[in-house]
Length: 252
Ligand code: AMP
Image 1: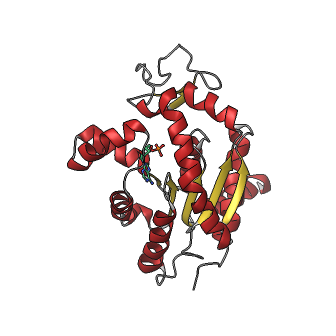
Image 2 (image 1 turned 135 degrees about the vertical axis):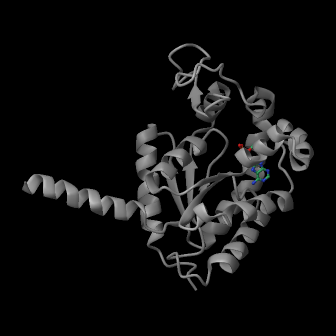
Image 3 (image 1 turned 90 degrees about the vertical axis):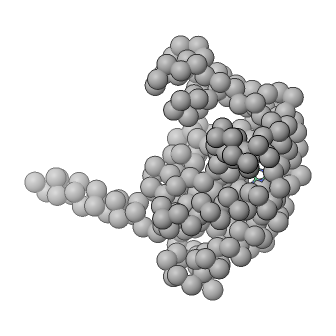
């Protein structure tokens, strides 16, 4: 009886922990660092949405919206979409009701301008609500060795139906090039092709470093070793977010 009661108490505590307000989280890391995989895991843990600008933009391309037509070629070439277009879709997404306890930003901000825009947007939209311990984001930076990154990106395959991500080197499907879940033929994203990868890694170095430096100066960056096994990376991220969610920086 006491054991069952104990489990219920632990269970109740962890649900409360999971469903508390987390606030904004930014996941930084070069293409192939595992941001997509880790965002999905963190999302499930805290039950807050993942907001991936890459996914939002690809959805526009898939639907053939005017924005999608405008950005299709840029994305295929691995170049960055203009700041104002990306900031607009982020603003629209973060105002949705499911983002009010917090959200994981994946792939945004990618430039110093986007970071400055995000800070003022968060302060303006959420600064006075008192919902979160801090309106400045917790910025978690996943660090991965360059050669491992190349291997990860060239091996990445995605299921076009359910979105599950595989890697032919480290997380292969049971049957070659076929999704374990729904049997769809796996695809390589256009921008994961070798000739595009170098441009994406260069763009990351050139433009995203200032984002880490910006939040570093504000004392909001935590670095996580992305070379570790997936579960260990998730555990480190959760620890970093738990600590950051209690921080008071950016609350004024
Ligand atoms: P991702 O899936 O995050 O690697 O993004 C795929 C592509 O979408 C990038 O190579 C860019 O062309 C575009 N993109 C995604 N997020 C941004 C952003 N924050 N700023 C500019 N372009 C972006």
